[in-house]
Image (cartoon, rainbow, N blue to C red; front, side, top):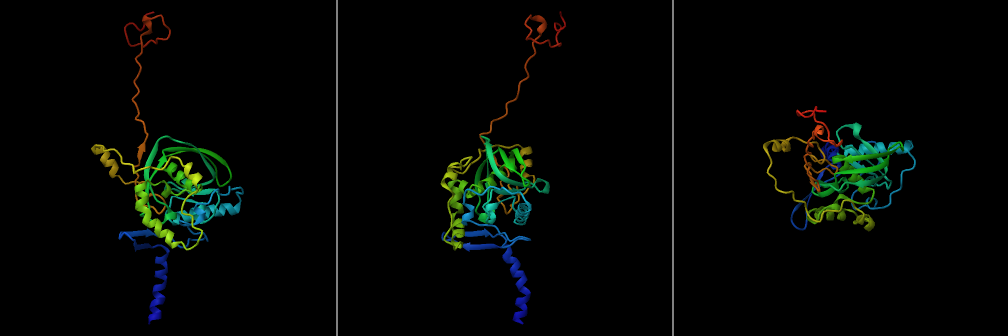
Length: 315
């Protein structure tokens, strides 16, 4: 009878292992809740590479040279893994492949999915927006923290066909692009956290370090890549100024937002916080309409005739 019971329960147990939540007790007595990635994905042998595996820190990554059928298949597998893991982006080092490519989709539409090869961010806006980010390779809902990203960027890259593109990206898409671009430079969002968030996430980081049994762990990023990070990591948590909002603004804040950074938690690096705060953003000044001078009363040709006064039609 016991063997029959095991036979019935085995498939259910296997399914739970593919996507589970692991709760453990850490040294300081606080509960540590870790979101585990699926152990396998449909129609692929790739799995998500987790911290501190060396492929996440290895630089430089090999450029994509051949845009052949094999590469097309790999790009499709990456997109499939991204969707199945409920992420919004996935870089090649996150599946253990050190190549200069990542995929992303900042929306709910397949029309917005992108394959980005050999990218370079050529310009960062001075204005930065602070929002919370997490990461599939850190596999933890609790390992999230504030990250400052440029509000817009200009980027050059090749698509999956090898066609060269130059684009200006803004808002959420710019944030996703910057996050995945960091992966190709051996940088994790954790490296950008302010000290308070790093301290809060340390228990989960220690847990991941403890689970990795090999002797080639790479806990820290390349020192040169760290010095080149743009924008610079926050030196302290960003506290938005206290503002009194109107009833209309309150209604807008209560409106449902898209999943990812702007609402429901996703398995990728979108941990809510859709109302990111802009830093360095200048207020728009109202343009004043210049007064039109009545040129009929002046010999100066720079003065225009308004046609609105009794003197306007005098010759």
